[in-house]
Length: 272
Image 1 (tube, one colour):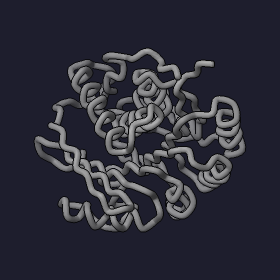
Image 2 (cartoon, helix red, strand yellow):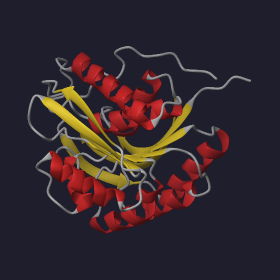
Image 3 (cartoon, rainbow, N blue to C red):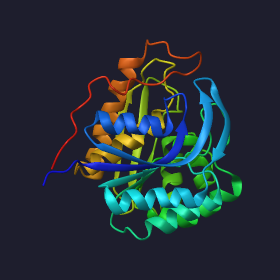
Image 4 (cartoon, helix red, strand yellow):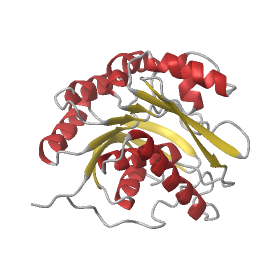
């Protein structure tokens, strides 16, 4: 019998629709992948910033994951915002029952507007219990600085930080250079086996960058679910995000940082 390629996103809800679970669903759907969700928190936010975060009961988070894993059987999992210890425990403990599934973790710690999304005590637990389960970790520069406990100013700093993050146990880390200034954005993929790959894209001049991290990690998850290897999945996801940024760069939605255009050219759901 035929089935859809499926992905599960475990993340927070963004009521303004540009980031979080909403961005994940739009991205996965646009890339022909059936999206299932486990919601970890309800955020109060819009294009101007995050006003509040309300966590979902960790037992409910665990049960959502189990319900999807047992029935829909996704081909890949993306983990986004987790902001407290109990939720991290719930996710890690539940996913141990489903080994061999690729897991992409976007370690969301601070919102673009500076709102702290992962509590300090949760960071240590995250590094010990959830991070080692990651097929790929996708921190931006501020997140990579927190995880590696060092400042990153240069590509050489990025290389040192990556080794520190890999030593925590994940299989690969993609450090996103979006916060470095200049006309090019340089992301670097570091594999536990020592392979390093660089991805370079021209900087797109737009204020509509809300949810870019969520969108990229969801796109990578989608392409992994579709069967691409890690480096190819990242390259394809970067291409999708660049096109989504380009397509939405001049659109006015909200008074702050608007969303990308996730649906510039959606694909039909892929069946196997």
